[in-house]
Amino acid sequence: MGKSLIHFSVQSVLNLYVHLQAVLTVGFAFGQPQETIGLRTTPENDHLRMRAAGGPFKISLFADLHFGENAWTDWGPLQDFNSVKVMSTVLDHETPDFVIYLGDVITANNMAVANASLYWDQAISPTRVRGIPWASIFGNHDDAPFEWPLDWFSDSGIPQLFCPAVNSSYSDSPKRVKISMPGEEECDFRGTHRTELMKKEIDYNVLSHSKNGPKDLWPSISNYVLQVSSSHDRQMAVAYMYFLDSGGGSYPEVISSAQAEWFRHKAEEINPDSRVPEIVFWHIPSKAYKKVAPRFGVHKPCVGSINKESVAAQEAEMGIMKILVKRTSVKAVFVGHNHGLDWCCPYQNLWLCFARHTGYGGYGNWPRGARILEIMEQPFSLKSWIRMEDGSVHSEVILSS
Image (cartoon, rainbow, N blue to C red; front, side):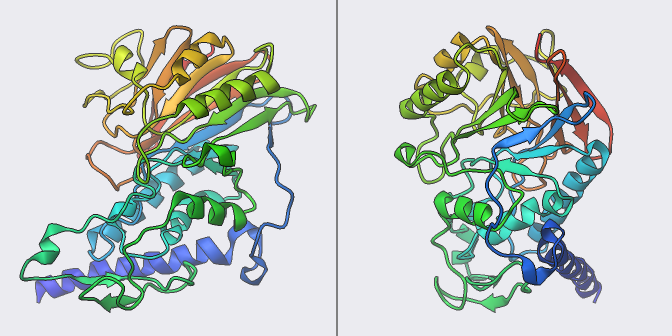
């Protein structure tokens, strides 16, 4: 009896969470009534603006949320609920101008649903409901193929699964179905490719600044650049933010030579004299991170609070770091992927930084938080710190010196 009561209590919380997320995600998205929400109707705009009167431009980095894990259990949806609480705490304390989802937004290899965009939509809802624009890049788990749990082949068999209909929105209540083989009812194990995930985010979210990137860079998708403009002149760039798809999932964990050349050509086109500072974002750290990784804690010149694992770098180095270090305008690179690392370390003329594990999904029990970036225009500065889920702040560092 006690066990049943506990299960009822947890399930009631999860059902309430689903209902609230439906309201947040659909009922009030973009500040419009539900019936007005649809495909993007406003022109895309790459330019973000500094705050008026010399105020900063503040960015929150949400890394490794890993939504959608083990949705057929109580703890799976509960950890998504806790991830929303972390993001909400950060957003309410920092009131950022922009949010970057730094990869592994979802754990596709642990999803039995046909449309993983439902969980992607859930993950971005705390940002969207507050009217904050955002951009996203892919990690190695976002379109990874489904991995069958070994215990599903034991006597207990496949459990009951929450499998929303393929054509449903997140406002629909998840449907619990009992399945005994792939494809029965609405459950599906084929996954959702990163091209589809990105298309749905862009098409249905007017606040999204994400982009597919040049088609000739396929299979990498999230390769694009955004401009942060001066508050008094929209055409004057204060900083350029570059986003690169570091692979994983449906293709190898690498930034290709083609992507590196795309970055070089793009940077020379929009910032030929390297006058404007540049900031770079991708998910899986490059091999250069291994070269600067501190040993036995975090010590100067590095800044951070946890150094609990080795750097899990990309499979190969295809030229992007050589290009970055030659550009004096590049100030820092930001990655996720390693949940037990949150340090920034100098590397030649730039900084290599980890974000902070934000989500309750994924491995590790270290306290959650988010890395914050602050850009100032006159004079230019790039400062960073980490805001924790309990509201505390630590690891402040100047990255523009």
